[in-house]
Image 1 (cartoon, rainbow, N blue to C red):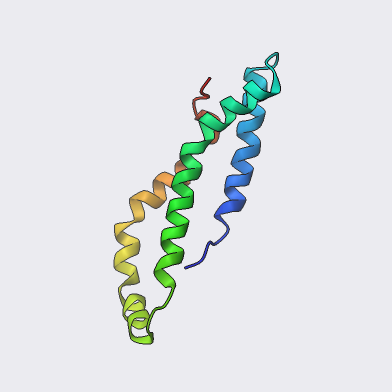
Image 2 (image 1 turned 90 degrees about the horizontal axis):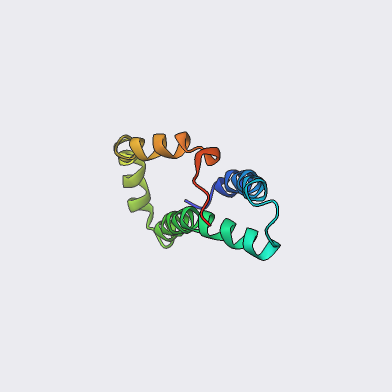
Length: 100
């Protein structure tokens, strides 16, 4: 399936994290502040990007029959991935360690 609004949540997280980085390094040059922000944020963004692209690639060029099969077994997939979903929903950007 195509991206479904995850970028909105990531944008909100970006704002919160950027404010925290500015708060932690108020007297540092902007280049240092943004470098710290990038080091802290990049791993989560890379994971989100890879997940989104993997989902996007899976829906390309599917046959009708394969799409119907996937609809039938979706509940199994959702059950299997429920722990990942809970971890994602429990993520708190305010507890992220800011890297220097």
